[in-house]
Length: 195
Image 1: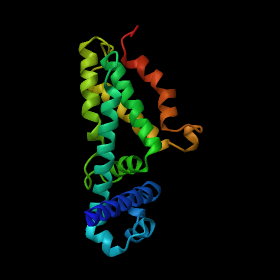
Image 2: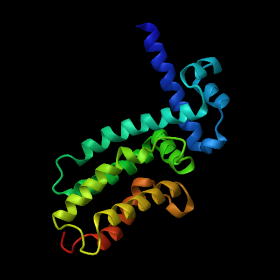
Image 3: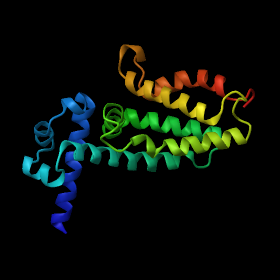
């Protein structure tokens, strides 16, 4: 039992260190030696848990996906409408980008190495698409804005918010603040008037 607990703590430390390094330096700029040093774990222990940098990146994405699924599930319950649930989901994802290096690293990895790691977006995008289909069926979406187009637009918006977070273009706003500032413009384009 003690060995399993220690192994779980070591694995967690490696994932957190990898996320921090990949968030700061990208996949190509991160190194296993820097990650093992930051996690205070030997290279032997690192390679015992993760056979390669790609396997470690997959571990980061898996943890980010689990966290995202758990948080977004709570964010979409008890909302007044499918559109309100979709907006709540987006706000939740933006909040996770602000607070979690693991989520930021997973989002970055999806952009940098889409062929190499499982997609973090799959933790929340199917739910967003479903909610937007339901919003369309409920008459909440503008007649010219189909649910697929609306989903594509908000994914692009969320990606931009994530990419420019902390840059001069964000004007000092975090991902949640940038999303809150831009979402009213998106709503005007895709939502039925009066909703």
